[in-house]
Length: 489
Ligand code: ADQ
Image 1 (tube, protein in one colour):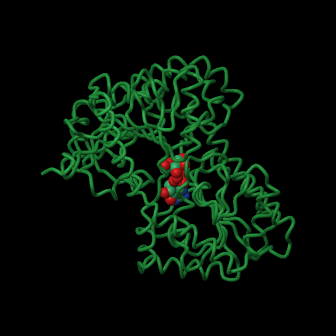
Image 2 (cartoon, protein in one colour; image 1 turned 90 degrees about the horizontal axis):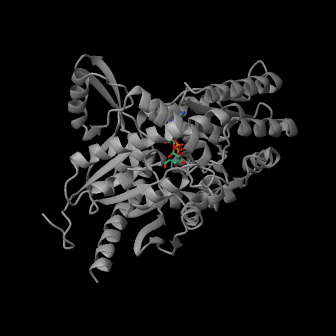
Image 3 (spheres, rainbow, N blue to C red; image 1 turned 120 degrees about the vertical axis):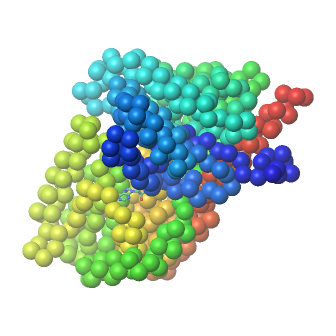
């Protein structure tokens, strides 16, 4: 069954990401239970109906024995998932080491902690070797399952070495690579010892995508300055071969959030929350507990607001929901204690027998509770120090059509470029400015709130996750056709 352009009706899409969209728990020697773990990427790709998608990635567990591997492979196949088995040493060096200790902070402009700097410099080569080895293992699995005409879509900073490995197997494979984090200024990228190898490998892809035009521009300028290649409006050219580079801003499945608000369970939560916080304005933060999210900065700005606005004491509450991540990493443990300490101090300072100003939860909320919280919020606070996009700001807007609450948004989140006209943009490092914005948001006239909300709601409901994925894959198909035409001339 073919379309007029010769492509099959439902093209096969191999989505390659470090983690599969399911969490696996071993129940016995040869039995596993699987849970779909929802996140931005999972929701985005589950909503895309045009393709027959298969996922390739690590299941997040060490499975050293053959019986376990066979059973897990079989269970995952029912969910259209294909595992890459990584042993503990590789995970330690590739995932904890090179990905999370080197690339993640670097791409978010965060330096390494002082005490880790030298240690990281020493272990750099072995971690990069493990990174390449892991990427090669992903490539082997892709190559085994690849069929002619498939589109291979590689995701994120974990797999920057993958495009080159794939093209070595088959130059005709259609390969796209998308980065979910920011791509930093070339001056930052050039500090990475493996800077050239990573850029060259990414350039082996046919299409390279980023959330914003700025990240794309940083990437092209890194290729120009570090590799001496020519940057063009279309991308990067190397000896007549063009790698297309462009911005593809991600979105959410907005309908899923809007529909959820009608569910009786969500309505029930909304009622409870309204009763619980009656007479108080609700401010909300929802983040993974990560350095990049600027949680201490957000809480300090709220403290400053309370210091300067005694009339608001007991009339406003900040709910900060922070889901712990990378809990085995000392720096993340330090961040958790730091947040707890600041929250304790502020609650001690401004709390009364009947009300505390901050409710901080170290946990994930289920979808109905999350939607209800978004819906009752008056002001959402997103203070990321850097963030590729930030989907929480999109989810908040999707749930606010009744209330028309205000979004305070860091100018360092990619979302600032799409929701900037409706949000109050802030520099999260400037707590005086953030505190003033909290006052502005709480006192905003309903007409202005409505106008700002309309702008953001329109954007969030028209630039969806599905549209993002379809645009990327269709651009990838077109890029490959154009390249074939160019070489056949
Ligand atoms: P993240 O850094 O994880 O994603 P974000 O885009 O905000 O950041 O997505 C987080 C997701 O997790 C949201 O869907 C949110 O609802 C959920 N979540 C967060 N905290 C939660 C909690 N306490 N309880 C329940 N759910 C919670 C990375 C990049 C981003 C980029 C995305 C997608 O860092 O910049 O936007 O990928 O490309």
